[in-house]
Amino acid sequence: MESAGLLLVLVLVLWNQTTGSGVQLIRDPDRNSSAVELDLSAVIHRVDRRFLSVTIDASLSSEEKFMSLLSSPKIRTLAKALSPCFLRFGGTRQDFMVFSPQRSHQNSGSSEDGSCDQMELPSWLEDKLKKDWTQQQLILIREDLQRKYRRVKFTEYTVDLLNSFSNCSGMDLIFGLNALLRTADNIWNSSNAASLLKYCESRGYRMSWELGNEPNSFQKKAGIRVDGYQLGQDFTCLREMMSRSRLYHDAGLFGPDVGQPRDHRADILEGFLQTGAQAVDACTWHHYYVNGRDTSLEDFLDPKVLDTLALKTKEVLKKVKLVSPDKPVWLGETSSAYGGGAVGLSDTFAAGFMWLDKLGLAARLGLDVVMRQVFIGSGSYHMVDENLDPLPDYWLSVLYKRLVGPEVLKVGFPGVAQRKRVRLYLHCANKKSYRGGAVTLISMNLGQKPASISVPAVVSSNTVEAFVLQSDQPGEEGLYSRLVKLNGDVLKMVDDKTLPDLKGTRLPPAEHLQLPAFSLNFFVFTDAAAAACM
Ligand SMILES: *[C@@H]1O[C@H](CO)[C@@H](O)[C@H](O)[C@H]1NC(C)=O
Ligand SMILES: *[C@@H]1O[C@H](CO)[C@@H](O)[C@H](O)[C@H]1NC(C)=O
Ligand SMILES: *[C@@H]1O[C@H](CO)[C@@H](O)[C@H](O)[C@H]1NC(C)=O
Image (cartoon, rainbow, N blue to C red; front, side, top):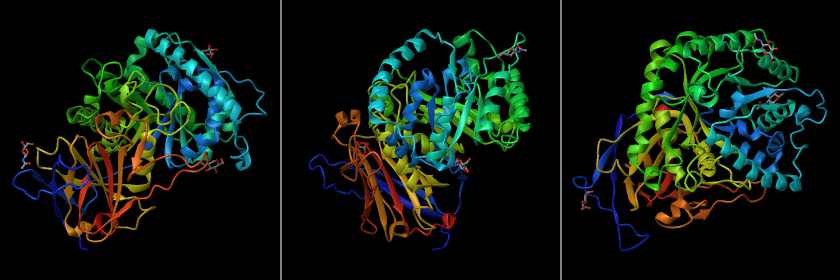
């Protein structure tokens, strides 16, 4: 196939109230269809190979015993399927954590000599920790509501566990240091970080670093104001410290993990960039669509809400490009709703629309990494529930990893009528799973009526593999479900060490593609022979 430029795809959105399954296709381009343009000739952006990444909130170590949950065989199995990715350990409590070494760590969870399978958490202990964690969450929520944070001491145990977990899962660990340890002159006091780096270096832990979480709200959280200009200097100090280290002289440093732009807090990023841009390998910011305590199902399916990410992203990119044109920009922490997520929404099938759209939009706009808050732990935006069983967003993420490559292609969607309910993104397929030239169309139907996409033979002439994700329950009620079906079958782990086969359905060539009501879909055109994906 030659590098054909624009391919026209007709998207026909239709609905059929009479039958549930056999949807009739209305091929009428003049009425309810809109022409979609796929450009298979050029890559418009290439994201990091770890694009979809995850976080663990620092609150997991608010009592250190909870870190042991990271030795659960089930959690390890789930984590492995998400690699390669970054694992960021950070969040509000990172700026209240002080490293307090105990120097008696023969029994630490470190993974020397590849002993990844040797320190499994016994199931009785796992059960006890899961129960205690439920109680602990109430304490954490109270702290968050009152904005009163205790100083938390952590020992070697926390870092050992993080290291063995990330190393054994194939994740790259990023550790968020406390930026609120400050001198009388309001300069970062690096002495505690120095002692932590020294310990990690002595153990040979390969990891990257961050400093401070949402510094724009330090005043609210701790009554300390740090301006961007000073923060940039603090980062420069950390970078110098790292450059003196044998192990960390070329390790990653990312920051400043600012909250999303709002009118009154625009300046911290600008100040930071002036003094700190040189010190960081990527500029990080955080994004949430809505307030978890004040949102609804409608927001989760609202294209206008989903589009707000584009505005914020463009604002941040503009600022960074001005000062540091080649600096990668990452979403260093992100999820559907802030304040711990939206109860009953952020952990259900409904959350997938915000998550998949964020992945699609962020890549298209040129962000390189997106770190999902959280893999396991606090709030209701976790990917793994309180029993450590995977939630719908976990399965969505695993599929994304397997099917979607880092090369972003262009999808034009000039029509307006359908843009509301159907959203599309296009990437090269993941070359680990598919041969060169294959492309993956990411699509979602936000509406309660089925839609259909008609793809020209030049893309679909041979095999199309469909991965259709739907709630296990029909209709709007189903959106609140914590179970998801792939091509009709509910996804569940086979056992604690085995994920199910995530098989696609092969569709006959040149068929139109069905997007069921409220569905998240990946279509892999294995023989598209896209020039950009060879
Ligand atoms: C086309 O779409 C409009 C608005 O979405 C709708 O009112 C109309 O009934 C549709 N026409 C057909 C033929 O489906
Ligand atoms: C795990 O640690 C070993 C030893 O330090 C290192 O060689 C390996 O690259 C690490 N793997 C990952 C995925 O970090
Ligand atoms: C930095 O913190 C350490 C304790 O962690 C303290 O001993 C030292 O005096 C502090 N340095 C400054 C300049 O405040």
